[in-house]
Image (tube, rainbow, N blue to C red; front, side):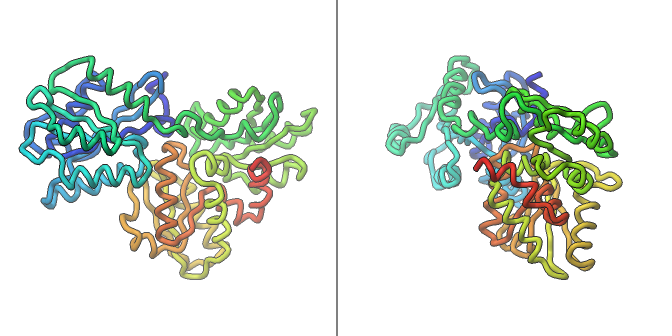
Length: 410
């Protein structure tokens, strides 16, 4: 079902603009339902509101309605922080401008939003809103045309033609990399060959189903016209012995890396789901270098562990228990380890720079842009970043073997 599509596979469209410019009304019209509360009182939207929908021919998208960021109050500053985080996961920016507001309509405020989006190489579309109340100023139309900033005209009423034009313009400016996302594993083995997927069934495995990276990898292999055999680790050795020819690739949950690496013969390529997502969701070379930076950590070094999903940790949780324990065993017991979850993240380079290493989850629930933004922020702050699978492989001493299947095709 379309509505079951994970966020990470959706095109993220951020809606920005002044308070009461009509952002929430625009979102409601696009989704054809009351997604955001609409009021004449400026500042009604306080936190980003997300709405998944189907936008043909692109498929699943996620609209993010943000709070107005022209509020200087204390509460307004909190809204601003939430809105600024949305830039990190935006793939198309929609700037809503109220042409009926007192002059000037276009100010340094709008310029800064456009500059922020363009500086991040994010396509921007300007919506000149409320044209039924006031005609757009000729100077503004000329300005947008001269700067080659695409725009559409929108009335406050419910004109379906305007919504259709808006959707067509969004389709026109969609980033090319969204249409051709990197594969997960299907390019690592020939068509018709078999991959063995090692899937431990532990406390973190949801009852009655597989976790998302495993499901996504299976689908990717099927799309590549390959076969996949799914087993628990206790049946892996017997499964490999019974296969003729041998599997072209073994993919394991990173937490089972040690046991699986001892079972899989060295001539059979081996990697993990998390390492595959280092390439699919981020910058593989940078995350690989970050894993090797674990070897440069010292006693009392600071490591920040980031989990994209905001979930309640369970016993033997990978991010809050296992990786911290493995790190302290590998480096020293007095490592300082911190944690962030969801979209929470150090707000400035100065806050990031207090850490010596960032270890991130596979980001299977995110789009690639948000993960790339985090990688770039770490680079700007001068700290290495890696992900769970690469970090675990390094600490087990099998990093080079685990990344060889990906390096081989580069």
